[in-house]
Length: 478
Image (cartoon, rainbow, N blue to C red; front, side, top):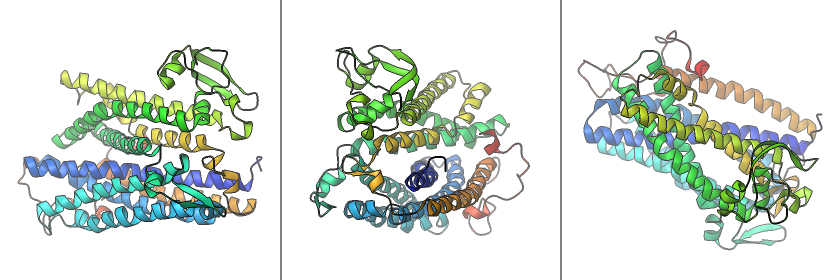
């Protein structure tokens, strides 16, 4: 059907499930650190605005964390069900790395998550802050191990192959493989940027509807400071990551650039736009800037970038896809930098919270970080093809021996269940965002607790119906 085989459906299924899953850990990483900052600032300044924001975002964090755990379990099972040959070949590396993630990160998060969510009125302030910090650290440790495993698949080292199986010989080399530091920094920073724009978008939504209070303003202010500082840093990290990829996966860079062949000793141009045609082996309708490809990728004006025709056709990634997914990621990144700079200009003019054109931009930029993460992930994973472990095992040799019918049925079931389950979860989370933080302006404040009139700590108790008809849905706006 449509020229697809069982292997294609297995790849589509994995791409579909991981696309859902990666969104939740990204927000979890960013929100956990954001919550730690909010509680730390509240303890230091005793400004109740930070406390109100903490209570508000902790509920959204809890819902997001739960969906991330559920979607992550499915990912683990797929290695055994759909990619059993890969598990047999490389499981001695990927299995322990994922186990370390559970032992060091998930247990740490789970151990302190209960205190963080339900211990506000039951433990001391310092202990509660410690629990929040531990959860934030746990999310970063989880990122460490997951990226170590995936980076090893991109740039494997520290092993030998015995009887058709990978046997680790140097665990430090396995973990700290050549691409790991760049991919770890790139992904962690992307999570912080995505969360900043998610927070900033929710603040802009409330300001556009006339809900203007110190908590909403603080949300937008903190989000835009993060965007201003971190988005340019992400661009620099991306440049280093690109140089590393050029060294270890030159075919991926050639596909990203849509660059098919070098001409004599001419420097490589940068193709801004075009349509790479894998059959005709050329990029149609190319809009080029001379020398710029060499300048960006080699930091010189005379060195050439490897071209796709230098690699056998069976070893070439799909340039049509990664060419555009990369440009979506970069384009959104440039918009993020622009948004941060605009916010600084408005801040100096004291119109950050009242400029409606800017607020609309901040609103529509809400999902930009998550879309950029997906685009970057597609670029990385599709650009690795046709290898599942780069240079060692092809994707075609890694899948389980399932029929086309079996893969079709499971793919349809995944699509239906995911949209129903996670659609409901995302809808509930957006409902919490739409309500906004509750404040006690002009009233005597308290820290909540039994019998106190304050937003409950339980996430599923936080979204009542008293604001269900307040304006248009945030999800419709975004």
